[in-house]
Length: 459
Image (cartoon, rainbow, N blue to C red; front, side):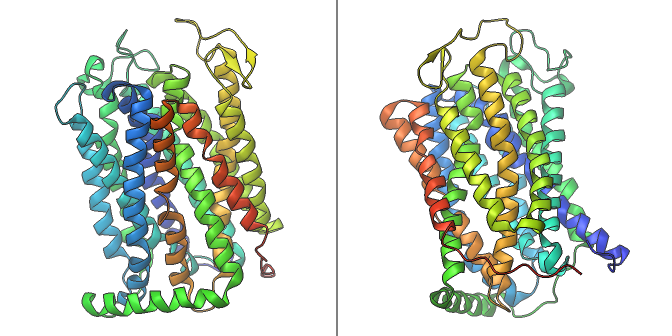
């Protein structure tokens, strides 16, 4: 990340960035574009029921992550070794993702296995991320943290793109003609009629994760051992309490954490329901949702790279604010789209069976807006990490990352749960998703009160 860094350091930087590649299929294949729509369309009684159940599962996982992340972050400071914790949560990712294979339609325990596997994989990925985030200052100087963060997000999007492309081209198939996106039979004799290709993204995610997380364990630096586990727990929790009390004198950090709590809740929920919304509102199958996902990921790669560049030039706070504006506008347009109407009141011709891919006006508008949403999401999350580093009190960066994880996760159940409750009460996917705009607006309002420190001078 800087001219004075040794080759071994560059190897450590890239192995750290590959962690985002490793975890991306949890969110891309499972939570959004393949397994989640399969769950809503094939395992749930209706898309609205599926959206509600998926939301409650996401909310439960978010609550667990929120409760675990802060003490774990503080404990990591005391034990000194972050990799052992990453290994523990890696086991959850592998176990949860693998469980999704055992969810064929009409199987007695399919719904329970699907929700449990999704929740376990999500908890593992989010908790492990809290520890890898804390490695950032050992890998790049302060003035290059924006580029480091952007590199991780961009590589993660590329990884998600490749994994999704592989799943669509070689695993998931249309149950009607039995062919994948490129017109071939699924690999390994997977049966399209029992949706084995859609279910296979679980084991694929597990294998993919193991392959791409291994370099982090081999090459990324870790601190030397400190206190034993019991003592570390007690000392870490004392540190956490002191850090929380210390927020009283950190006005800007406190406001940012509250803002981050709101807008990340909204963003996570919006992406979690993207594929499910497409399946229900537009009648998309796995192929349509998968191609849609590829387009969104490509937009995310471009957005993450541009966002990292802008981060170092205009500051992370402005990047976050601009991203929130794009997200609010995108969300408004998305919930205005129905199969035969756009912008709430404009009638259009609906999708016709056997039409070309994305041939109808609602589909095209949905794709266009989703591209904007995807391009805004990467910079929003990448710049948030950078702003946290700038606002953190000296000597308390890892603890601040624990609070950062807390603000991003302790209420992360609110977004999915709010969508689930509103969807269940109204039996409307559109009304359920619309509630997320309040999270973006609230986070943006708090962000305007934050005073960003002056950026370090370039070396």
